[in-house]
Image 1 (cartoon, rainbow, N blue to C red):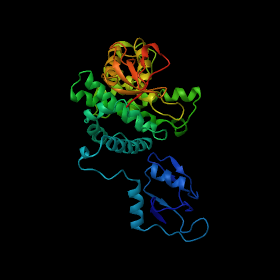
Image 2 (tube, rainbow, N blue to C red):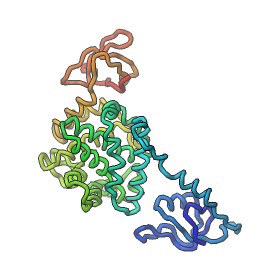
Image 3 (tube, helix red, strand yellow):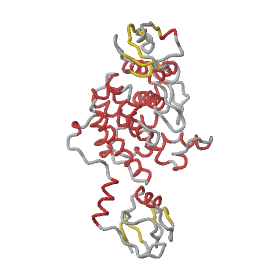
Image 4 (cartoon, helix red, strand yellow):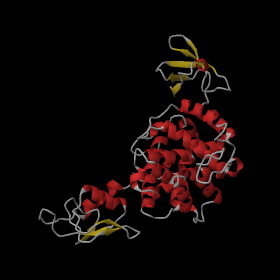
Length: 365
């Protein structure tokens, strides 16, 4: 019996093996399907399967009706399309893009090519909300979660990179390209095995495989004619470092495209400020201080400084929360140390953060 993959239920018995788009066997013949198998069918975009007329327990298999099938399909589709995305709050728009990017990524895992038009239509409207991005840059990491960190990371790096491109003086068309490169920079992770992609602790061989992802990303966009060459370079080079210590080519200084240097800063920042399965998040402002240390060797000094100025854009009177959970108000800012201003705590005490290296700003209140 040939049925839609959305009609099968746990207990169905496969009459023929299921193959993916590359003809690689996914589920062998005579397998008794479980909920996990059915999830695999959806993940690999399998439309139809051949199953026995009877379930494993001998009862007659009753495929779900068309109406029930439609409900299943609808439950796995993205949220209802909104004609005017501007009507969405920035957070809702962001969550919608993350959800749809996850679906694109899963199609790449199934060896489907990158559809640049679909990618552009997904990310550019979000990038275009520059005022909203500017208000969210220091709290963007809070949108992510451990389970879907990777998809949040790609979207956040994209909009942070575009935002930083604008702050650096690039024209709108260019910061759109920078954002596009930021989104596609980790596309090559789709070419890694699931065991490596989702693993918490990697051995040396697996770490080296992860380091191949910029090359895989580049190969995926290399022959897409509608993607500018500068975007392709940024995708390939986003893990290169100014001192030549990066990968995959060990490039240094001016050999690294400026777009890639922008993405590098945003990639590090979002990764360090986000909660991940294998690493705890850090305060944006403690991460900024780490970036300040890296700027003299691994990162582009000018890009780091503009990024810091954009995020640590405090003003006198800004209320903040410290890492010891004390709240305070900024009363003086040293332009050379924007993350370490002088504060007046709620009890009236004056604290100069530059004299207290054990303290840092956790949040803006």
